[in-house]
Amino acid sequence: MQQDLQQGQGETVEPGGQNPRKQKNEVLEWIKAIAIALVLVILIRWLLFKPFIVDGPSMQPNFHTGERVIVNEILYDIRSPQRGEVIVFHVPSEGRDFIKRVIAVAGDTVKVEGDVVTVNGEPVDETYIQGAIDAAHNNNALYNNKDFPNEELPDGTVPEGHVFVMGDNRSDSTDSRMIGYVPLGDIVGRADLIFWPVKDITVINH
Image (cartoon, rainbow, N blue to C red; front, side):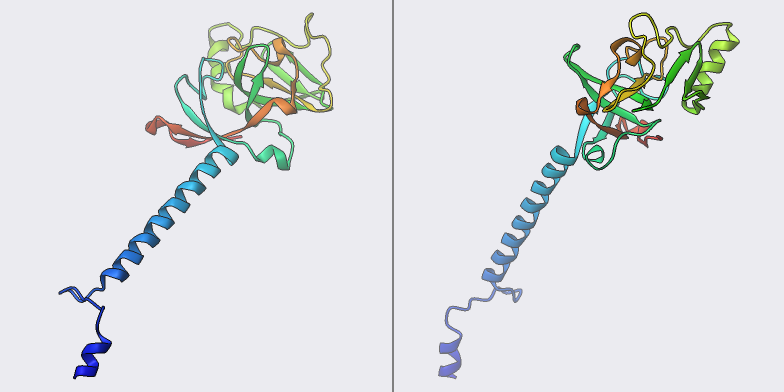
């Protein structure tokens, strides 16, 4: 009995049967796990994805002022942008970022005439704004107010390392018809998800 007591010295057991030292170790492990998770979340957010706030009417009816979107910043390190994708890019002359839709890529010849957009001579099926175009036509009006090429930008062929972009709201959008082709180096990433407000949460259709 004396031997048993000596071997048990220093081992204090709570009434519930748990060892305080073991409890302390478990708490430390939880703290470590939470800290690692927070670091990973921060890295993923700032290195791979970035939140962006839509400001202005240029992408209506699909995006609205105040909506927050998640921008995938790593995708275009793997491949080039494709037609129909919604991108966020820097506009140095404006000192801010724009959100627009890719209409044509390097080597494409693009033409905008009225509400008909053609790429390499083929009309683009713009299902994402067809309802708005039809509504304008029902009122005997055009949805688009600026053609391309034009006097300011007469070259309709997209140069290497660039894309041609337009806003979905064709009559209220400053895009490649005015600012020219967008260099790939100015592209922040692809808009993949509207996450705020909650009622508008949706995966963006490209």
